[in-house]
Length: 114
Image (cartoon, rainbow, N blue to C red; front, side):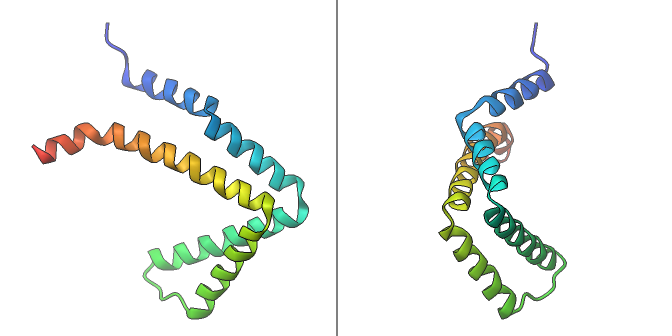
């Protein structure tokens, strides 16, 4: 009897939630939420990132001031240990998801590379 692909996806989702990368991310995010200054800084950084992404996607020009603001917030955020831990946790989880995506997309790539 073959496994339903959606059952496999649901199993992968559960395994992802049980992964060290995910558990570390949740813990790091909870630490940011506990720290009022870090939480405020993190949300400001997220807002600036989203604003720039929306402008980019709509084809609007991003100004030098906006770039400078984003760079300054990134630097300041990276200097905060609690946020730095969160960013490192996000990166590790992102790497895991990219690896999984590469594996999942392999059959499609094989079709076009044949």
